[in-house]
Image (cartoon, rainbow, N blue to C red; front, side, top):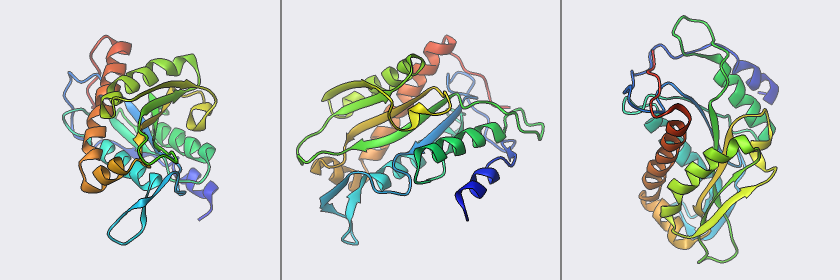
Length: 234
């Protein structure tokens, strides 16, 4: 199927009527969160030294996808109650943002059977950095507009304890953050080229830790924007 056809299909009304009701106390409840698995259908950084059971190396793109899927499940749980869309894994960043925007607009948040045409409240593009040094590690976030900075800061503060190696917040025209004027940020929680990190991901321990940190950051961000409480899902 051609890319433009898949983008159009995203405009079909997505019913959220069957979503689980959320806890009203969550600042994230009722928010529309777009997630992107960085590098789409590519590979991103690759750790050639740490191999999976099938003998292939650990790639950033598969780690990104793993985190996005686990994060989506947690955000949509009754504990949190967000609406979550995941951008299609297209090759180009522009196509992935267009897909995210279309899916957010297609959500039926009010439950009346009609698309609400709402904008994504935030877009988070999940990445894991790369280096030629197998021992190097660190955490950073990336943003473009001043309106993105509070989100990037909240995510940075929550993710940093994963490595305790600060690499700061990078401001510039990178990746997903340059399109469609969305509040967005790129997260680089750790370096997948770090052998210990790649092994921790393979063992299944690293993704839950990162998901907890991502949720803490999103909670802090939305609490700062709304005064602490979100709205329940209908």
